[in-house]
Image (cartoon, rainbow, N blue to C red; front, side, top):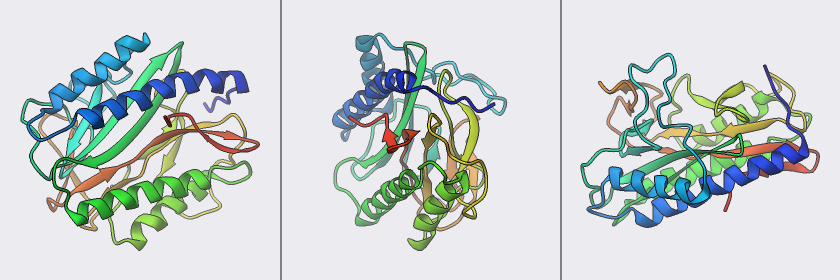
Length: 255
């Protein structure tokens, strides 16, 4: 069921979104050669504690997962696309990291993701990250009243494909509100002019995921969570929680 939010509720969601933004900024600042993803998870948990917020990721177990997610942030490195579980292996010079984080505050959820490099960046990685951000911006620009879900999907997919990148099949964004995942789903590719009509009060997590090698295929690690590119190429992920308003899209997870 799609649940529209009032202006006041969107303001309350913005408070949760600020926590998400601060946590992702802190993770990016702390990330360096020799720092482990587990260290970065501790940084993210610290932001939650300071804000009096909780994690919708920690202990989350959807139907596909063999075990609950054991961390507060997904950290996907290099060929990992999404849902990477933070571990103790230190980050290396030139690693590409995608950090996906959520917060629950005052009964409302926020969800966002960023991708960045550690140490000396590869030009190809920077281009991949820039395209993921451009695809996100295109999706957000299409999130206006009167458009349809398919218009967001088409804007994202067209940006990714024009750059020669793959789009993981079957994964995309989602509605968000009292819980992290609500209706409707938001594909990262598809024909425009189709799907539900966007109305003020609808809040969506828009999240393009790109595969550098151009394939759409992925595999899942034995942990049941981490998705990886089949060809070993790198991946990037960008996401914001966005409210549809009469005045245009409002990003709730920006700093």
